[in-house]
Image 1 (spheres, rainbow, N blue to C red):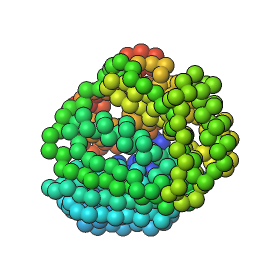
Image 2: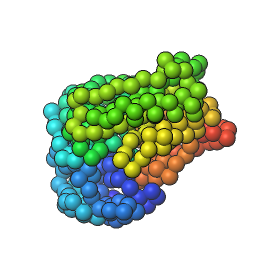
Image 3: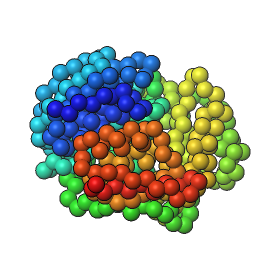
Length: 339
């Protein structure tokens, strides 16, 4: 059994999710201690417990410590099993993070799987549906991953109630990733999603984007949602190049002004545009696991603590070594090979 100190590095839920995925993929039992020790509420929260139970179901794992607040967990998986799976987080916990936990093992199953997850589709500190659909999965498609993602219902914090669905087909043709240059600029877009909010929120956020980035008005769009449970707001900025579409998301909250939400999104997209790297800071650490499985190289504008923590954990499970080479002030080449 592989022992993992889950307080290492950034000490958050990503360590748990990556460990569960790789435990199933490599058929390595794991014991995690000090789970989410660096968070204000340490231990397993409902969202993390949903990841554990989803991973347990697809692999018929033997688990101890799978309860709310637990700071330790042992997980002994069996082989991954294709099937139709449905998970209800029960809160506005992120559907995307649960999906990413089971995605990698299910790609190595012997048949197609259908996964439905209910919870939050647009929540803080987690990928939005649009990020998955237009940024994350298109990069995986270059590596041969064949997955269809759909959104049945939006779900914001704190109401939740969203629904995400995915068809995950076996990963037959596995291609090394080569994503080092963006290619020519294609377009840009700001999309403001609101559910049961004053239209002034939209007007202010898009006005701030126009002011900060000088983007043309025809690239600023709004979508008012009628299928959302409760209120919610997300501002998404996307920059499309020939090789990749980068999506940045900032979420509204009752403690945040519209100006502040717009500032968060604009600052992040500015950091991305300041260099020539293809992949943004959040996508970079999410690509480490598939990179370890098939090899290749991508460039990113920032090496975060999430990145270094995830890389170190993956190297515990797989016979690989990540290499980071700085190519400029805002450009790092990330590659992976057997040591």
